[in-house]
Length: 410
Image (cartoon, one colour):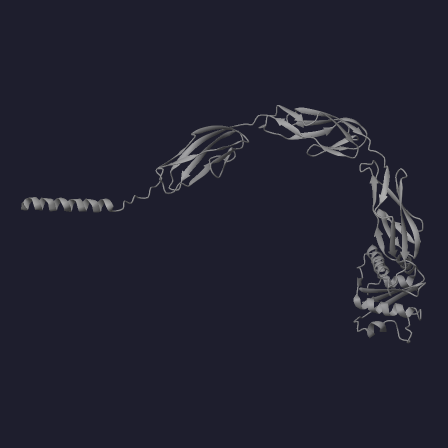
């Protein structure tokens, strides 16, 4: 009985130990790569194509499956991330896949030269265009993996139609010609082109039929010719009274003196459009537009002679305005109170080492007064003097006559 009890105790102890062992967690050792295999050991490709190789690392539970790819001849075949082989030119190269612990696998790549073009086809075999327009022809070289898909374009008559890069046809004048696309190995395709003359202008329209301007200002009026593909879109501008408003190139209206005139735009074949211009007198104390133009004209004269431009200076402008108003009372370089002209700058606290003054009256435009000053030796010397660096202009009116004053400082 005692032996049986002892045997049962031993059996229970064994079962408890077995259960405890079974309950313990099982930990596997980290697996390292033991080998690597590429899905191809050799591969034939054509230059210009790509192919993705795949690498398999063993064991499957390897902790690090990173692979580094390389090519033994990158001029023949290069490698991109993810095992992408890029075939470049004829030859052989060995592609290697390498694990982080140095296991390797290789694939021999044989690259064949891409085929030469066997033909070229255009998107149109005949085409009709209007002079002055453009059209892009498209060329398709076959086979699609041809070694060189470069196409050279030419026109049999460049006076009728010229060719630009990318197959762009520039239709120039009425006539016919043949457009040719040629591959690098001489394969050709042609398109017969007929160019029709562009229509003559059928009308012209201005963006304004009436305009009110202030003397001394400018405005650019725009002309639109119909149809949009008219053969000649040149416009000639004219004014019924250039004294009131003159015309510059590109439809620029120069309002000169109070009055009314008509601006006319005329096409090459005689179609016309008009705009009625009313020029009003400047009502401000000083004509700033005229003053700005005088500075521009003076600096143009200095630039032609290689001299530095004069800078419009606020102090000089204030002194010029004081003196311009004084000219209405006494047209003289001596001020109404008997002092010299440059005392106007002193009164304003303007710092200077040299000063000069030009005066005039009776001239209706900046161009006229500057031309007169440039034709007078004393006035011209002031304008072109190197001792002056700053300028202010005064332009005012007594209601009938303009009075002009240039105040130079250095």
